[in-house]
Amino acid sequence: MIAGPELFGPGVVRTTIAARYADHPDGIYRQLVVRDPAADPDLIERLSHDPDVWTRQAAACDPRLPLPRLLEALALPELAASAGANPALPPGEMAVVMDEAGVPV
Image 1 (cartoon, rainbow, N blue to C red):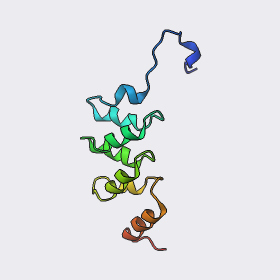
Image 2 (spheres, rainbow, N blue to C red):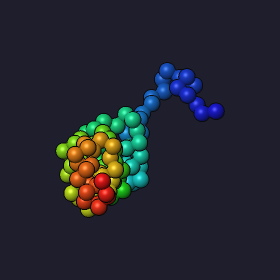
Image 3 (cartoon, rainbow, N blue to C red):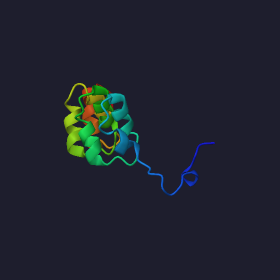
């Protein structure tokens, strides 16, 4: 059985993955931040500029990524595929991505 919050005493400090790993020196930990529902859009945007390409790609896929940065990511070769798969991409932009990829209508 997984320990739930009821098993922790009132003095136990709980931190989110985002709070714990957003500035971790290892990129694999920063990638985990994107999976945390508590990570806010500003943090996702910051991670989309991360030195680690896999962290940037994880952030580019996230629907919390602010639209201006999502549109920028579409033009970056290392982020284009991830940004193109982002469910928050507006339909008009998605049509452009599909056209550029040669996907038939």
